[in-house]
Length: 116
Image (cartoon, rainbow, N blue to C red):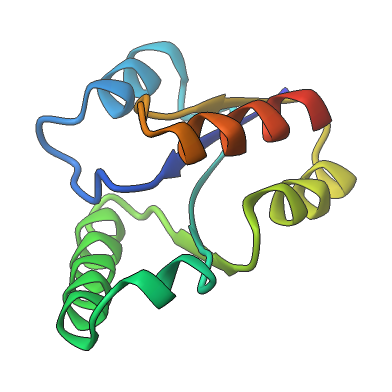
């Protein structure tokens, strides 16, 4: 079993409920990944300053994780397509995320779950 922590809007290692759960349940001897998926289609709704802020936060998160010898893998593309690639390499997987309640987020999550 491969375990994945999927960062989305919660680009922090402190005060992160799903990350705390992940840390409690996964041992360092198990196979795991930390990922972020850049879906640039959704960026069309963002301004330049917000995109720059997002990239700065990702860089800070990457640095924070590297202090624990953890690599943040950043993928580009639609979530479902990225998970198809991951599942082709690592299957089965468990995915840890913080819940998002927006309708388009629920639709995305359901599509990824169904493909799992």
